[in-house]
Image 1: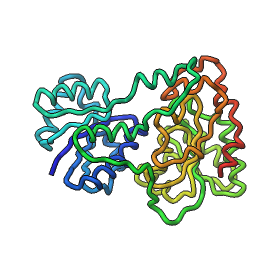
Image 2: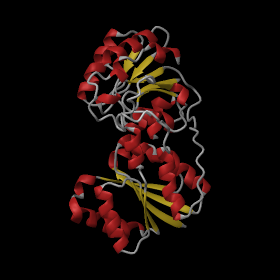
Image 3: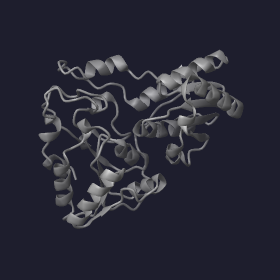
Image 4: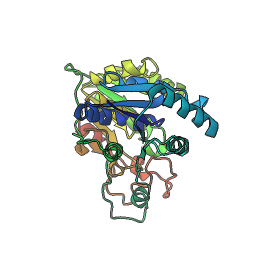
Length: 321
């Protein structure tokens, strides 16, 4: 049995995108075992995948060079891997890679395509073309190790009974989030014919969605009420999910639920569309040549008006239902 030690610590959506990659790699290479090191809170994402063991850690317990040295020592002693796969390529993992190389382990790391993404997000570049999907970048790491990997880019339904519409109106960054008044209107319109379930996290989002639940008939706020395992189960039972370019889109992919995704300053061309989701279910203002101006939605709008979000016609979302 070949044992590969892989690590990806954040962000939630990026970690979620590793799940279908691991599943298909291990199905195609049954002689391989993967140990994934990630945050404790992400462990439920990886339940039920044969030959995959998720080692959840509190990353804050391993600070700086000495902390990474401690972590590398613990992982080496516990798992004795044959190969190291860095699926993150940040300062922490660069330190880990250096330590593992000194221990004579073969180390392979993801190519995040930074230069390509810089070109894609140049607002003066009007010739946009799609980049490699992030899941293919993850798979490339294992191909370099020597495994045969052919991704299907198809999600798998995990629930036969589906009803209701999930709505996740929030995102980590402002540049990815439809104005709340528009999201409220979408939910209000759809609630006339569909049960609406709100998803979110954090006290502010919970409070906002509690108010929406009071004002919108046929709706229920699930924010703050479910564990990750329970949230995945509920999303699997939805007819569809409506999400920003955010983690909820990726959760829908993991459990085989169709997702209508809203994109503002970001763009599916950067390679982050939910696994198996259709480009036909993408909602965006295509006419703006400045898009995308950001890979993650964390840059200020150079125009100052976030036209990519404020000019988005909500009827485009409703028509896709």
